[in-house]
Length: 251
Length: 154
Image (cartoon, rainbow over all chains, first blue to last red; front, side, top):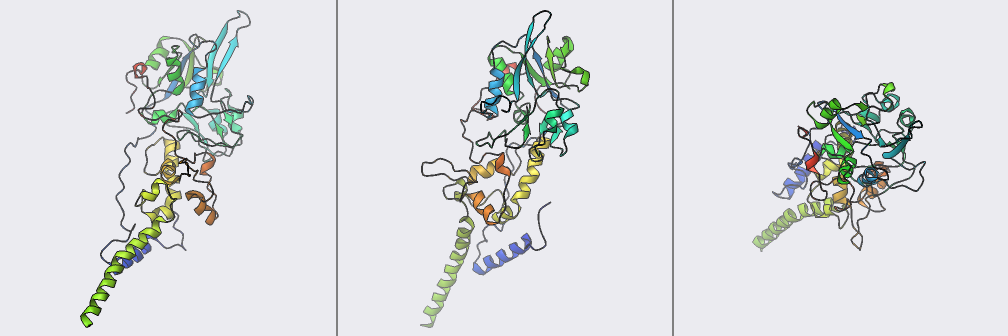
């Protein structure tokens, strides 16, 4: 709780001293002694709720060759700037190409944190920095992350990155820094503001591809639930039984 | 003679009555960086003494609520600290709060405390037109037309 240590004067004592000085001075109040009623914040949200589970469906057939709109949008949204070092630069979302050797068919898909129901990164984290929110979003709490990178090893999707360099001028909505692991947050800052649209989905739709559908997997009437009910979808590495929040069509 | 002496004493008492609180007020605000938004404010989000003593606890409690439970818009936020306490240089450019002599750094170096906040959090107010970050509502065009029905947060 509050750090009121034994050797420190309490607030009551300060108030008393301040009050005495003020009384000796005149009728005016001593500055700062009277507790001002602080106006309640304008927009306090109630926070994550287990009534929802946020997820995505990505239609691999609609993902256009050569398009990087989702990756660019993510980098802009979270101010992710690389150092031209592809092996160590932070990547929250990337495009992957798969070729079927027998038929020659090439699939393209964006790959990012799959926001598993049973995330291996959370299982292995020694400091509980890796955690799953009540609404199913898997995040890194940088206040607790010690940068051990166990989660990067545990993740079957190679979704997490380690920040190797000191950063500055981060986005307010995406604090990030050297020595911590990070990954896709499903644009949690937007969802908490009540904007039910991720940066990658917004960009993909703006480009006219519409390959990404975002929504509430727990709401049976949501567009994403209806689509998942109607069409066959794939979880990548379904054999691991992680029940991913990100699913794919036509893969 | 005697009556004029009394009136002089009265004057002194009156002066003290006016000056002491004024001096206190000056002493309170003298630690705030000149040119910052905070320099023109009476007090922080809580009385100055409370903030001095407890700001670290306020931030620590609210950060866990925000990161882990998704509660936004709480009373205390580091973003707000930066917005008010960051000073500006001669050209009007914001100076990082952890730079030499600035609000956060000067006090923390005096008490030999190294705040780890700024390894991850930005140290200057975020420009409104930064391009990154979601600013509700004007700076970003939201494609509400593709937002499915029944997707509003309750």
